[in-house]
Length: 204
Image 1: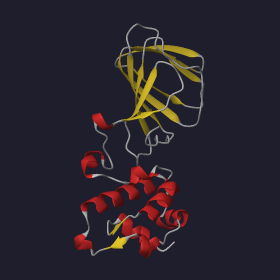
Image 2 (image 1 turned 30 degrees about the horizontal axis):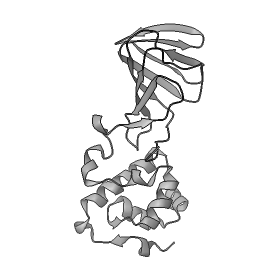
Image 3 (image 1 turned 180 degrees about the horizontal axis):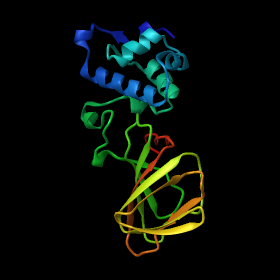
Image 4 (image 1 turned 90 degrees about the horizontal axis):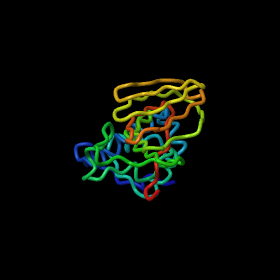
């Protein structure tokens, strides 16, 4: 791949603010995945110098660089682009009106992603409607949750807990666990998982 053909270089004093934000996002995603400059450059098929220029905001990404770079970081190409009207979500914050929904398989449950793209943890706002819940399941990682509204029945390793607003929990995700809303009001839970979750692609 010809790096020079895929990006436009400019002196640092003329670095565009949008390019700086894109560079910071690329760097945050790289660090969250414990990749060195050399690792990511090799995966994306670009030079280390070109990647360094991108992260410092000294070059503008072109289409032929965005796609392999996004694939190397395991994110959709849109995750690398920070539009002017999306500055507030930038690297470390997610505004209430900008949360992205996560796909769910169980009835009566909705999940919105609370953590930004570069985060090493997956934070979710989980809404469980009356009667909604899951069968027992397990996976890698650790979990923490805080019930902010309503009541939830949580089962961890065959032990059942009834949690109300203000109650919290934490456990290894490898333990079989399930939850269900047996009340007539919806339940809201701030849920954090140490397993990084793939973000939904646009349109999904």
